[in-house]
Image (cartoon, rainbow, N blue to C red):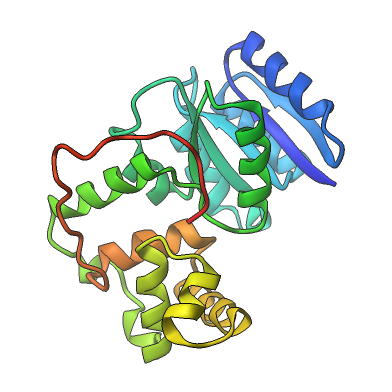
Length: 233
């Protein structure tokens, strides 16, 4: 049973999400909150598997709420998905740095929302193609901050390689095929890298790879299209 908390200042939006999730076998909504401060208190009280958190709310923003949840050792297993009505560009980097596991637009199809909850509950990053491009674009505009991303020297050569491949969007199966190893071995390397870097999940591993310069961000052609469908990284 996956336990989900809803944090959104729009009562109608919360009601819609609750109706969808309550109808799904294997998912339980453990509570609702109308602002970021209430959301942090709810998550601390109920410790859900996944918290769906609106990015813009009164009292405390979704990004600050995410930062506080991620900083609490007692909530290390909670995965935060940021919800937004807006363009993603101005929020992506800040929210991922705060500890979010991914993003969803509020007009996401119901099936995609359900898939997203399962994806982040497994510890994977939920980054749509458009979000991934935005994240890469953020790092194109700035040099690597190796001093701000310690820990690279703790990774073995193999762990650096799988971290770089994960940052390019490859799944464990694709990493395994690329490196000619088993998917289980690829997963083990990823898990060890996350442990050494104190990364909450795969999204944090992606941020580290770019921030440390392990992966060089490359410019995308300006004509490249944008899509919003969610998908694991």
